[in-house]
Image 1 (tube, rainbow, N blue to C red):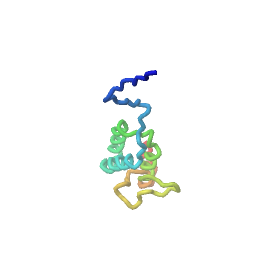
Image 2 (cartoon, one colour; image 1 turned 90 degrees about the horizontal axis):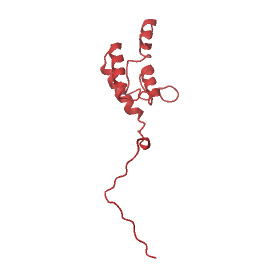
Image 3 (cartoon, helix red, strand yellow; image 1 turned 60 degrees about the vertical axis):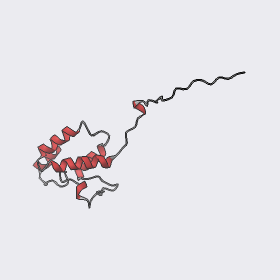
Image 4 (cartoon, rainbow, N blue to C red; image 1 turned 135 degrees about the vertical axis):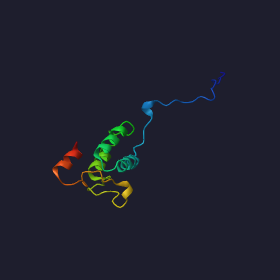
Length: 113
């Protein structure tokens, strides 16, 4: 029996499907971007809210919900046990958080809104 080889196309590319492509989970890159924007917003809560609204389309808030919550409440990412991961590095921390806000009812309500 004579077996013939099937012809092979050269230069053919394999297309990957979108469902097969995985995005990397990088909470530190998310933290750096968010903290930099919050620090540039200044002391105005309106500017902070505007920054969070404008970056919501670029940054995936659902995927990094835990990191977002840590930054908005504690000012930086939290390690297990509740300590800040970046306590010594001021460039990775923000002062626009609930923990560093004044301890009166009006200020805390503004942060919550």
